[in-house]
Image 1 (cartoon, rainbow, N blue to C red):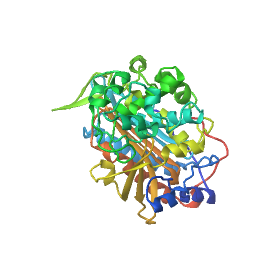
Image 2 (cartoon, one colour):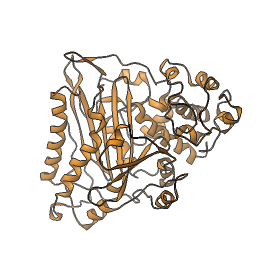
Image 3 (spheres, one colour):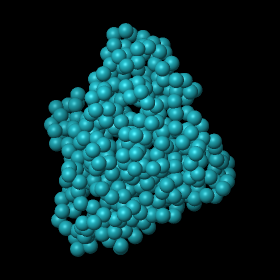
Image 4 (cartoon, rainbow, N blue to C red):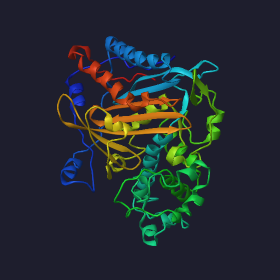
Length: 430
């Protein structure tokens, strides 16, 4: 299996990069949160490429391989693929386990998975691109773009905005009409049936996770561009970022010869399943396909590289917390040091207390699950770090793989003496 490991290292500049702190801007929150908001900036300009020396590179490889190989051996997962990004480099990319348990074919860094609701982060960024181009605005009314859109209340119908649907603050009950999405109804049809749902609150006041109404963001982009959403994703994100295996349709997945099949747990192991068409009618909510190597390119972009695709200010708007996510039952709320969660525009924004400094750090994150695939992505702005893991089976590992891998990386970096780090001017080809 092909791995990508970047070799190399140091100076005090690395220390500065590792210690730089960039809290996320927030709005419609508390006064203290607003004060933190003004400090949020992504790395600009691009930082130097950071490399690990051979010794620490091998420690990283050994740690990750031990973690995933153990999970495969114990039957916790069928297959997995992972990408790790540091600054503007993919420092690790590889696969583990099988694409199909019957064929015993192996997962690699180019194996394609369905990423489920991790697609919502792509939708938030794609919307930002079109806001930047002046085709739409965050505060555009949904009814102005989709005339048959109706809620039970005429007032609320006229008040729901693009920002509301992307932040899950439309005021509707949890998962309204997700069943209709999974039944394959068109978004135009679903948009006209929201009058059957009684809103709980005024738009912008509460968080309730949605799929159907979130997906209307993609319907709007189709209407303002006159193109299918799968083509817009291809032209605006996948092609510019050279994400060669990424796609947004069932047909594209069927055409690939390196796809991880979904699996179902059975009494004596795992059984492969068919890939279904759920959410390809609602791509913005959960219809993207991608490999780990392409998710690595995506994370490089999210860390502030390639600003010609999306300007930093617009990206900050996408990651800006809009509404707080309450409760303590979500799996990410049990991660070490967890303090609070918010939702931006297609992204979760978490606050964690760092064990060594007691300072609050920001993690931009999303998880996804569809058709028995699971996916996790997290961006650590302070550390210039991104981690993405893709699975082709439902599993418990997905719930805490991000903090565990982050801990592995931090322990290795923190153990490196300064004279084991070098900074190279030339980039290492992928």
